[in-house]
Length: 439
DNA sequence: CGTCCACGTCTAC
DNA sequence: TAGACCTGGACGG
Image (cartoon, rainbow, N blue to C red; front, top):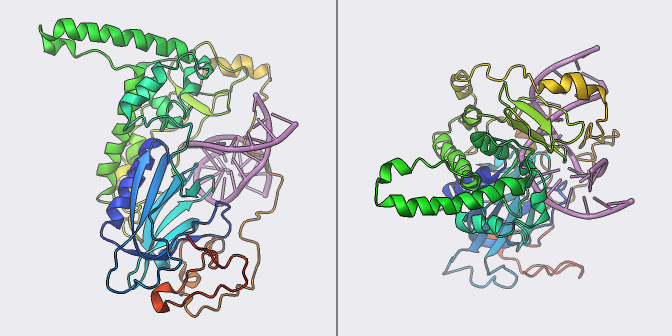
């Protein structure tokens, strides 16, 4: 899910779902997650989101509750707090009822409603991260979608950077220059221009620079003449780094409003990535690049073709509890019926390079030495949280049946600001250590 | 069952 | 330039 467009759609989603809602209490983190606590606690606050490239910032703003609540200022966070998110491979936001809290909801924001609802950051693989009081990550370039001019400038004025010594398909994943581009977008973008993925990046981009000047010339001279015929100029690589992601944003905007199956919509949109009939190779970082035709000169030795059907994790109907269920999947799944079947990858591979067996890359990622799933199993049964109201949750978890465990695990203590709404207890600075938690 | 694969960073030898 | 970090779906035996 998460490349630039998805991050932006996530911010739209948050803004739409949270509009007019008031949140309250502390921000809760699941115990298994190793990201830092978010030390924010407030009787009433609102949430706004924005995105830039492959990051999202949630701004938590205390809400004027005038009248009462004036006194419990002491430790309350009175200033807005920004929390930056990076989504890793599987992060996204979801808004549900408290009872439907999804497994892997690792950071949670609660509304002040009767049956509470929850905005959660869900992240199955936990490669995602967040940082309280964070800012856009230094070293990430301008957003390819919403800071187009500076994005262009940043690339074209730094072509001497060794980052551009690499094949174009690898340079495109460098977030210092292409903030928002990910593995499927690089494939789709290169495919549109039929640029071989393993051509040196600088070579491709220098061409653009020149071409750009040409364009200006052309425009200048022909503008007065026939504005019509001239427009046909093919877009360059950098402009596609802008427009292609925006196409996906558009898909999503239409897609999930009516809780559509944004799942197959994206698949149907793909022209190259994971598409049957396309070629694929692993790049120097072990990532699969999909392309058509000539791979170009800088192919890694022993690169292997891959095949895989992109099976997105369910369809995030995002919105709310159950609603879109599945029903829709069928209707749309039909569109591109058996689109991906068997792939006939790079023929040359099979015969020759296979034999040379130098595949050092073989695998990545998989190191697993049957390390116990250190996840949920921290059987810290004790619990110790007699705090009166422990909403009936786990029991009602009917997700699928098998995974009921990993789910909920809160970590209440973190920010000492619990029952604020109820009693305004001047908090107990118990045992010195971390009691204070001001801010 | 086990292996391979996945929309991304990070750090460490 | 390898791993490490994770869970889980697809597919093979």
